[in-house]
Length: 427
Image 1 (tube, rainbow, N blue to C red):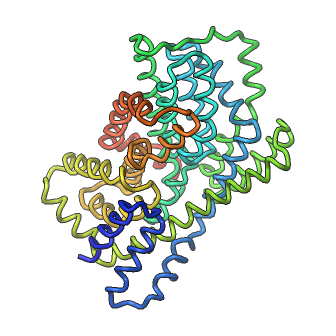
Image 2 (image 1 turned 60 degrees about the vertical axis):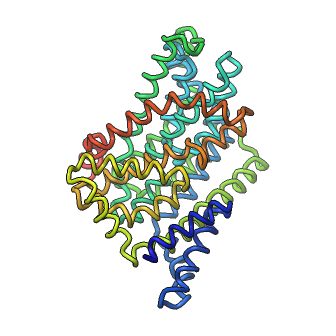
Image 3 (image 1 turned 180 degrees about the horizontal axis):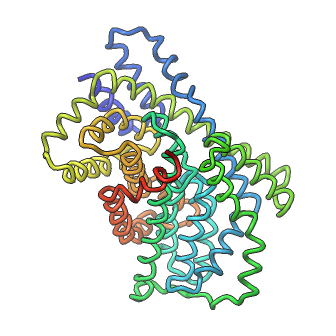
């Protein structure tokens, strides 16, 4: 009962507009007072939540993404995407998806993708005459590719919480990330051909233009390949790959593109420290709350309840997706994941779902929630720099839930999309 009480109290505090991390901390402390355990467990589990070595990768990947945004790498990635697919129906909408797929290999978070590359995408599309709401909607949708294709901050957090291989968890996102990108590109093509949104296309690039964009963007384009090859080959762990990504981005920004100044670097460090601190504090407080949920066997109780809904695996997975969709609209990604893993992972194992596969299902559901009101952090981030009313963005975004839902169903019911690459490369 107390496992449910901490969740109810947490939701009540959120309704009172208490910050997420403080809501988790206060709710956990209140329930611990009712348990026959010493208060010393509070600092113990806060520290325990951050004691895993793999979590060191998170601030490094956040820093690498910030350096790329300030050092000119992001702009060159967008330019390369423009010469590759800007001539296809959908124009810069197609470019936004391709650029997000490339940038995903460095950013690791949807917010970093939306705040960095997204600002460039929205500005370019508005200047080209695209509908502002459509520009914001495709930018928001494409940003979800970032946390799927490695490196993935939320993927690392899940691997630590579920005690699975970080390397396999990161590689598992490649297939779903590419699938989402392809689905969004097809959807943009259909919208453009239907005439619903005017989508000016760029002329087919000349060979000279393509080679120039490739040459200028090659150092930036190599970054995802470097990171992924280090993890696959076993030369570096995910944590060590984060360090390499940071120094690689810094070297390219300073020595090749020469766009990162000392003043700019100081601002990059400040933004990265703030973002990393927020994520780490969320992880610490969520670990304390998830300990209570686990201790009170809330996961076992939930498993029994879900089992009673149906004895068919496909229907149980559908109920889990519906549950995650509802929960994700009121909880943010990382804390939601840490709270839900001890609750839902036993259910997934009970019905025969691979924990790596379930991790991608869980993550993708929570990613969709980041673009859904009322807690859609990506939604608010894009609305902030796009300068559009929230209602206008939400209306433009509604059609894009069709490809997002289609991708979710394919990920859920076709495990091979998730598991083929990690099983092939990491035994």
